[in-house]
Image (cartoon, rainbow, N blue to C red):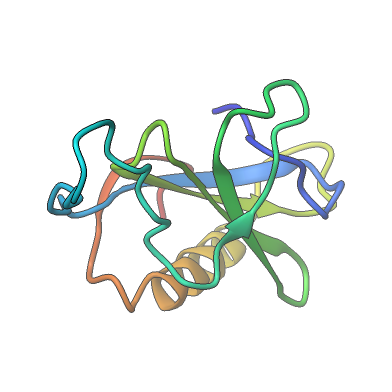
Length: 126
């Protein structure tokens, strides 16, 4: 899973989750033409430019925990998915299972305003 935008944390991604967002109604356009791009699903997501493609609209949010950082990423070109990354200073081996559970709990708390979301894919699963 490629990481979009520029993360604040330079730690590697040691776990990730792709969540399916609920279908949203099509935007209402008052004048003929192309509909405006969708807004991010969570209010705390902020623009996170992609240096190699400035036309892309990517939004991200990072939350620090004791031993890792949770990063949420939403790309307007793929509005049905929300990606969560766990970044930690682990350069070899796998994320310990107790930390995987903490990561999943942190993500669940952050996406609670939307609703329970279906997991499209994840590595590792708890």
